[in-house]
Image (cartoon, rainbow, N blue to C red; front, top):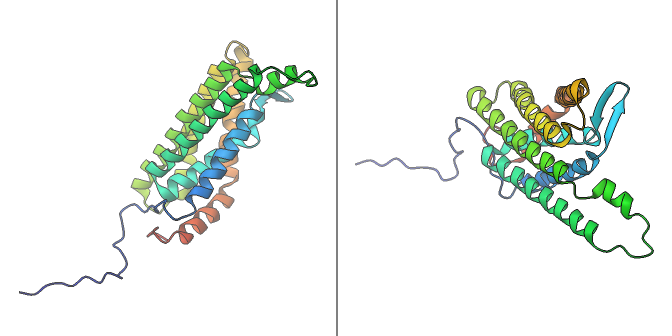
Length: 231
């Protein structure tokens, strides 16, 4: 009776959909950048900004990068790893909000003259915090889910379709939830629609603009990861 020998050093069979294992990789560094940018953006989002007739908030500068990094996590490491990063960001956002609240309610020293300014910027505003964490959670989970689902169909082809398609869904959900929970009633009528559409279109178009950067970054990370069989 003959037995087929298996070479333990042979290249593993190519999987239908390729993802890298998070352990012993760049994954923790990418997650750290993801969470850091999220926290900075949440603080910036407390200020409404007007560029001529267009209304947005301070999160406009960095927050779109969380979706670009979220795309990298989903594309390279898969749904479970991306979901873990999203929940980590969620937990840190809640911790930051709770910490700011404790600082706000703690008695100010007599020499401290900026209690009002602190409260206006970092004060615990339940509506803003709720809007931020809900919008982030819904948007990022949808973004990761849609990207992975598209990848299951396209494999390694049509990366642009995964990046743009997931952003269209995720950013819309995020923007709509955040704007509605945080500012509906404060901003009304046409101004509210303006606020939602400007934020959504800006974030989505920014991802398209950064495609020439996202492509080589994703390619480089895939090549760096020895467990990514598609590299």
